[in-house]
Image 1 (cartoon, helix red, strand yellow):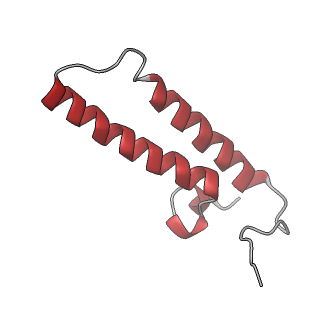
Image 2 (image 1 turned 180 degrees about the vertical axis):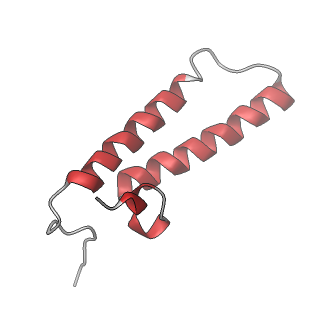
Amino acid sequence: MDFSKLYRPSALNSFQFIALTGLLMSAGAHLILYFFVGHLPEGFSWLYVCWMALYLFGTLKNLFGKPDEPHHHHHH
């Protein structure tokens, strides 16, 4: 099993990439809201749960998906 699919940017699939981007953007928004606005919207923390669930789904698909599945779509 290739565990580099968990952290190596070139080995991440779309789900993992979107989840990590969302996680970083949510963390940035969290800091801005906390320090400059003074409060977070109710339920904001659930974003982290959603991003982690999406990352987990992508990881399972990446690790256990069919190796012959095309990872990129090539348009000619």
